[in-house]
Length: 424
Image (cartoon, rainbow, N blue to C red):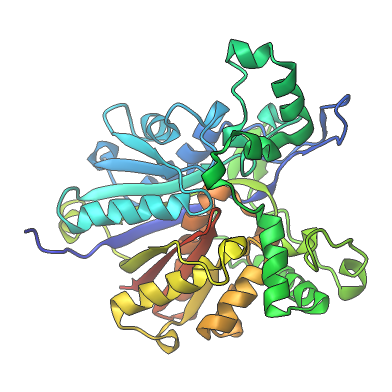
């Protein structure tokens, strides 16, 4: 048996998270109304940008020293297909560095970090990069479509039977990602996540005003953080051509109850303002063993203390997004820590009711949660969000001179993933 070794976080970076392109809502006008700022950056290129930044910032002289790369991607299709993790490794580090792709929906990049951390802790590898990328904009930012939860189970157009099937064409054209219900196994059908969020709000009796307030606060915190330059170190600017550089998240809006109160409810009391923004972005972590720190003259910024996943939801399958509660409890139990021992929390804002329910049932203090805003304001590029949460919490722990942070994300289909880190 090999002894368990400490896993260090050497660097953590992300790109800006920008709103995805907005296609016209017409079957007969499938072009884009507004092109996202990162829409024309190839997903492999976006991932390579954060990997390159990790290497340069860490001062790693030999890129080929990285033993493995794993990138999370919730929808590894199209430009994000054919093992995007390996493609990113090839472009950023060279063809000799192996890579793979993790698909764990919204928790994909945190699952990539969890897996590589396990390999380091058991002595299988010494140095690794875990990240995530998602470009949700329509392909090239010029045509309708784009990726979203469920789009990976659309009928493949490469199939002759699908090309020639009017039924499949109509199902795809009229339903988009909702066509998943026609392709998934009967025993694996799930409640759409928006509906689940609405049911959680009903179960916990969250009022419309409470949900609106949470969304307002997310944007206000993010606006203040951006204005004070809190994101400056964690964000890697992205050149998009013709001299354009994107260096800030662009989904942050300042609004009030009068504005949000006019929005129509979509799922019970839940509106679009209570949901994470669909966006484009990437994030990555450079992980190392103690031996790798010494060998490559690297500096540790934090250690991964524990990780946990859960498929235990509170209230039945229709409340699938509440597995965050059990994931938090499991990861704390592994460490012997309590809620009071954690300095900062990042709970992915897939929907406002998810965060509020997690806070209510675990006792997490609201004032220690998502202190720089969350996915409602900053965006949620699916497979990249787990690494983004760890990146943000690490930089904020350093800014406030605090020690321990916990990040958790709900995962579609009734799962969740959590990680605790401690500054070194």
